[in-house]
Image 1 (cartoon, helix red, strand yellow):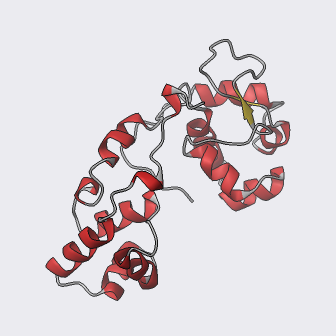
Image 2 (spheres, rainbow, N blue to C red):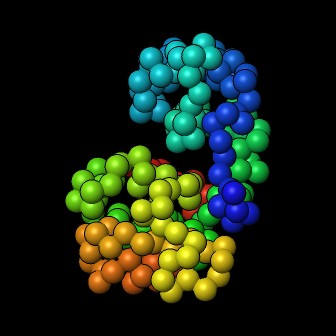
Length: 187
């Protein structure tokens, strides 16, 4: 069951016309797909797939495209404004926010931390973005968690790779991190 503090934008909730909106803005700015791709740091084939409606863009892809064209994200995805407001921005709201900050502070990539801790990159990425994760990594009844709506980390190998004694200590450290940046990039 989804919890109020763990809301995240779902790709299937993205407006069907996002590709059309993207194409119209790109053409309005007289940009080719290759030019836009270079500006946004993504492949031109991704832009083609999105514009044709063959693929829905991930949040970070659409953010990069919007930034490259100097338009607000809501020009392509009006519902994302509400979703972004609901996205966890502190470790007290979701430990993934703090986990990402700690990982970056240690100079680790998602791939490196995932490999070292035995997790999949996608699992770690979802956790850091405040989305769902497996019960092997986090739980609402983790040790040291008193709030029933608070997710706690339970993966000790992840904790030790980041220099913490155990998952409970990592959860506490994550909860202390506040990251109120309006946009984040996930790597």
